[in-house]
Image (cartoon, rainbow, N blue to C red; front, side, top):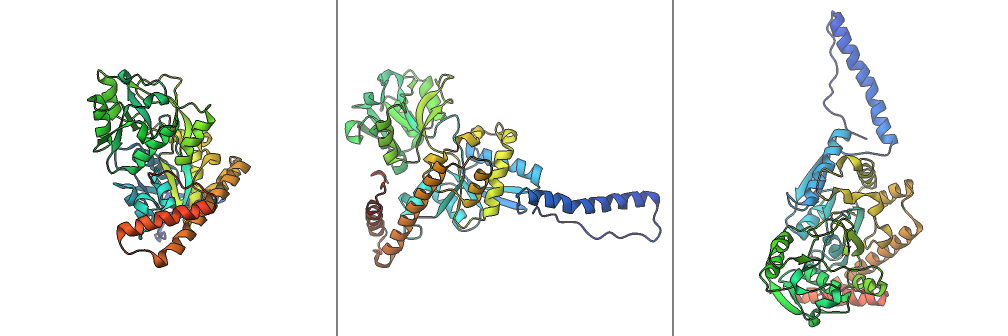
Length: 406
């Protein structure tokens, strides 16, 4: 129920003037009406504390801006403050969630890596986490695809064979994403010339400077505007979903990547291009997150979508028809599911996929419990041993183990 504070008991003077009577009568009417307002909110199922906290990407990013836009709705319509805590990296955003400093986290693929207990989450202090999804944002752009120099004459994914492809040092998630996209045409890193670069922006610079031909990134990422404006030009090779075997190869490595039509990005025509994408932001909690709060958050984000969708870049991606329940790779929170059932959006196929995702988490967490008692002490030895134990447990359960880069 919405919390109201700051009301004190009225003190009436001994002699009451007509103006005082009017003022005090108005005050009493408001006081009498207050329980009705609270009951209406409670009857609607929406209950918020005075302050809600999210972790998100840093200030200036689309995810942070969207959180602020949603926060304006919460403040204006429900008297609730949304505190957005920017996180510099994958671990920091989820560390605040696990520590209870925020209610939810609006991030990206780190939620998958945390569920899986891989990359930065393969350490002793992490391991597989019981992540739960509330809502997904699939924007009109895309989270990661191939961008090529137009003069490299790459028109189909198969044309990438033998070309120079950027490999970002210290970014296994980016490199594994590129490996997954290469698999669309049955290619691997061995089929291309690997060009090592020091970071995401350096990848685009390598293509601009003719050190590479192919880079991976978001369709509308600002660094690719430099490539478009350069003498080399920019081109997006497409990933047709009609080739179901090719799609299956990509999703065997990155099951949270889904076929998508991207409408935003340099050179992209109004009809869009066929790509893969993943949710960003992906709003998540944990299995211990409050069910009523999760329900309320999803309900408000859906109910007021038209009021915030154009107030931050990518905000339109929170649309209900883009939730992709049947293709999800992380289970949804029961509070969120409650609302999706109410509006008829939760299908039998969604329920079946959710049960499969819950089973995967159960296998991973049991593998972690079995592994810890005899785990090696050294950091590197611990990680290597855990990844082997994890892969063995998933394989024994008949579940995909994900790509080599993880």
